[in-house]
Image (cartoon, rainbow, N blue to C red):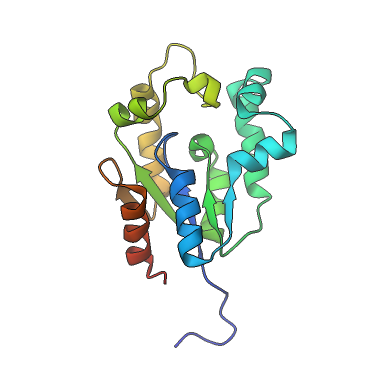
Length: 174
């Protein structure tokens, strides 16, 4: 039995490529568990009063990563479901902070399926250099997601409810 002064429920931090289902799964997991939901992309857009695509266009990739890391490190929502932007994995400081807020769960989806899920990465606000494919981006981020994830969900062939079910089972969330 845990001590009476143990912290409240641990949160869940979703990481993965754009289009992997982090926001959809996060909302559904929040609904089913009653944990609050936070989307870091929405947090950044609200704080900057601009869409991600506009923020990325105004800053270098490194500049956007600095902005993203700053917003992520300001989150104090332990015990929440947090959906992160795909590029958060480039910030060791942000990832370390997220690990204090919850279990880091990687939704891994293959690049071919990611490409089917959305057509215009730039319009969507994906931090991707011109001429870089989603497969290239996946390959560059894979080792980082692997490094930080405490749980990996092979999500390519799963529906959002199936992913939520796996997360709940692995984390014993009621």
